[in-house]
Length: 117
Image (tube, rainbow, N blue to C red; front, side, top):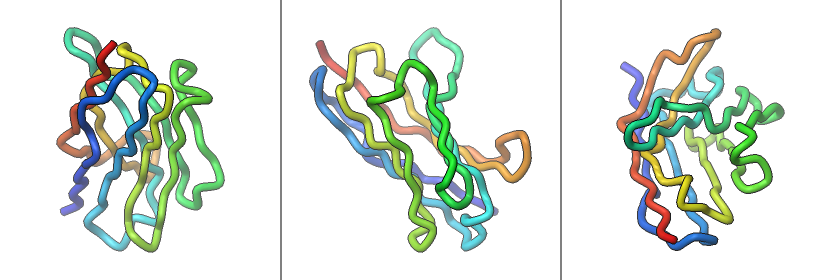
């Protein structure tokens, strides 16, 4: 059973940075496209970023382009989300997810990111 475990969330002031990590439990990690999503209180979950199996293709939501960077280390079965220039509107629970086809099959439990103004 695939498990995803996020870490790295916390409280940061506006303009600060955080790096989220997501550890994947299986060696099959390298065949999955990985994504980060977030859900703020009272809002729908939204896409943040994704990265293909090799790391050669990345996609970002317009709201985070230029501030967030998604990377992966296939040797460590881990995907990262570097978040810079954080804004209060980035406050949310952040989830990582994995997919082999068009839908995300596996999700982590989430990590809270809070940005104070």
